[in-house]
Image (cartoon, rainbow, N blue to C red; front, side):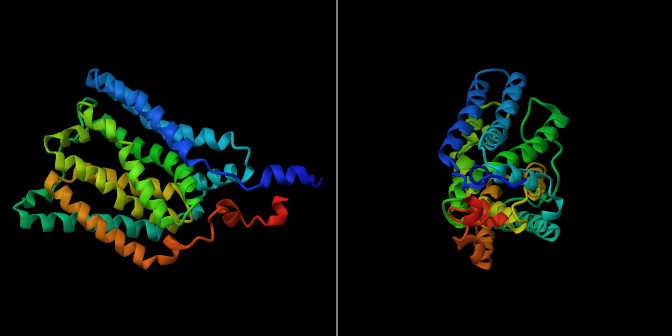
Length: 293
């Protein structure tokens, strides 16, 4: 039976993304758990941090489920389980590229009297209170759950209104600042940076160029969340287990920025096209004006 005109309009009309509301709620439901973690023991704080970590994914999923948009729900499903969308060569290139970033950063750091001992794996993780197994689990969960939130709804909610260059810039800054309460929570990697304000500043700045690279991984695999999960997990693991000094992490930010700039230059159409603006889902799934009623 053919759908009525009203049903076609309800199901296929252009969905209006709400990025401001999303970020307000994602920040709120993360920070209401992270801020109390500042004032309690590391063991209980770790539980609150894990709960807060889930917030963007939960908010993203709720936004999609209550959206009333069949296209938005279909889009999330395909992005999550559409293995055919992943461009494995691109993901491998991105992983090797980040490994190269680390190698170059360490080599450059030798000019600043850093040690070659950085070419080694650390025995422990940078954050304490949860044990090695708990730390590994946290890194894995962070890589998986964060991307459900950031790629499930967040990045598209910004990209629907502008090109992907400015989306990457805005997302990178907001994603980076989302971590802010962690610098005050005992036992976190971010808290360990408080010994030098420059290390803290570098941490927040580094999220912006990295945002461009993650956006490239996302778009190159046709907006696959799985591709971003794999890349995010590799980045998190390497950042934790390679024995780079905080000084070298500052050098790394410069190298990441250069790599991000090269990626943008080599993919100008990807980052600067505006064909999708105002009709991201419709462009992706070929919905015409007639289909939207």
